[in-house]
Image: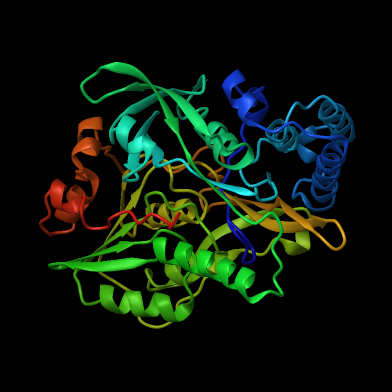
Length: 443
């Protein structure tokens, strides 16, 4: 969860140091680094050290000797074999805080990788959930395949965020070696090649073409993650993929919801976003002022309660909230408030347990040509009205309900179907699975 608008990357880093080094095949795909690049990585590590020292919410830094830890990791950069491993060292340095919202955002690459698949946690296991047509993944993977290992690493609830962060953000791969289990129980290997598209190594934002390309990318991402609400008889279904709505968007959506007896708010896969958006949405679901949380901050004067104050006419019908292992940060806060205030029912899977308030600090190096990266730092731990933090704990649904591998393979969504039924509507699992089709970004 952020305190200002930035490019949001959710990357839980719990025990990231345990992801000691990539498999041999992964190392072979990463370019070696020269002395100059090694020095740049050292500067990034120094930035991480300084930003956390200045801004982290706990001045005691979880009891860690921060200077000694910095020295240890600075020495490791001297022997990093490739760029991905260099970035991993910076990330692992920050992971010592065991904090979901303090992490390293590395510079962009000159090559854009599209794996051709998406995967997610269901319960304690990871499954292939999306496959892009006309890719190598389409020929070798199947939706509903359980991922037993990726490039030699386990992919379960304990390791999921570490593995995804490494392979998606720190060291994207030209190919991935899988060990899979199909819905029928068959175990098989697969090696899947990514689509790699070169991009400009240097972008000049004073040039119309480069600037317009960045704008197009942002517009495509906004379209793919947009909020959607649909009618299902007396039930409205609101698919909220990110907390990035302004007051006009919230009021318009709630206006539609108020025409129905019940609302199913689907927060599955929602990583969080802006506090302002969370407060607007929370205020639209309660008929009274709601305190979301009390922050624990570095300075007591900054510890102001997070309060959603009523505005306009709220939705006062039956409310059901859906969450899963991909629901994090603002999603978890909202779902837990609904539980604590007895406002509605939460259904689905246990949430991510990644709930802190953070700020993104953009960094750069270079003069005429700049390299951009960033450090996100936790500014506050958030304590709910029951006196507990959701960090590392998450939200346990009132009703635990998960799709099976066979449901995923068949495109069924039994969780949404059940929620609509509980809300007083009718929707079968097959139809539910077609309501919000996944939208791939242009290659």
